[in-house]
Length: 244
Image 1 (tube, rainbow, N blue to C red):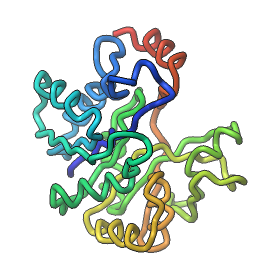
Image 2 (image 1 turned 180 degrees about the horizontal axis):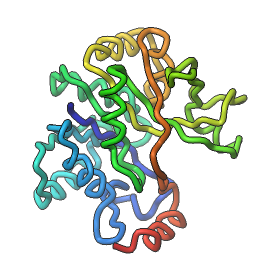
Image 3 (image 1 turned 180 degrees about the vertical axis):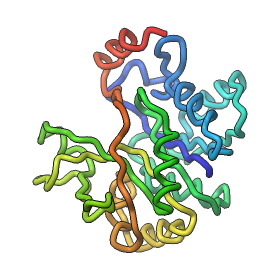
Image 4 (image 1 turned 135 degrees about the vertical axis):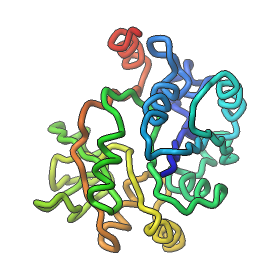
């Protein structure tokens, strides 16, 4: 299994902190957000390679960080060529670019490195192996206005996705989908097909929305908490929550 880490956003709501520093390299408790995620991925035996997709503005920041980082698994850095919010490729575009550039023919774990987690991805990988199908996560969210900012999923009794909708105005359930996905290698051609058929490239939930009725996709309840870093206030609070 290979991991594709999507880190090409500009985090403009965190300005001025992220005006000249990528959000993923902000420091929390003595470690970067990216470093904390890679620490976990490096400990999962099924993961053997990581691909980080960033933008042209911040690619040299990541190169410098990688020069001082030590991990067991190989890390490849890809520049998506964008230089600002207006010309970025979008999450799905970056995912396809990584698959093509690295000639990936393997199961892929796709993650956003934009938040802190209090759980490991190892249980997600085990769930994927149990189901032998592409997988997503979900977590209950009772704030309907906040729910409208997410992909929202319906699942059957066996955990298979019945329906998923990106940023619905009238959510059918309270199950929000965080930006963590595992796609089996047999489904990679469908990802390319989705792009060719006009799938919206900006939000990753759009891809699952295209795929779920074409291939089995199963959903696992997120086994812990995800701490978002959307603004400076949240960042300052997280530095207190994760002091070291």
